[in-house]
Length: 91
Image (cartoon, rainbow, N blue to C red):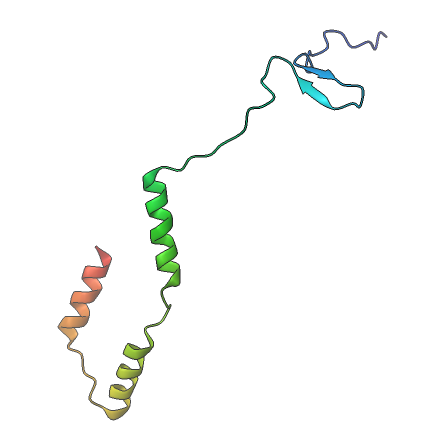
């Protein structure tokens, strides 16, 4: 049975090795640098997302006001207002 591997891949054809064993690419300019650019739309999205995350999760003043009205018995909401809010939120 012949166990030799033939047709080896030429995976390292673009690389050479210096004496200290660090690979160097052939044919590329060594002084090039990587850069990233962000579109204006992505920047606006980032600013909006940051603003949203800075908002409080609970509007404390409004919650306190409603709690006080509930405890005093002066808080009332009509069924039609509740239904209208439910249907407008579903759209």
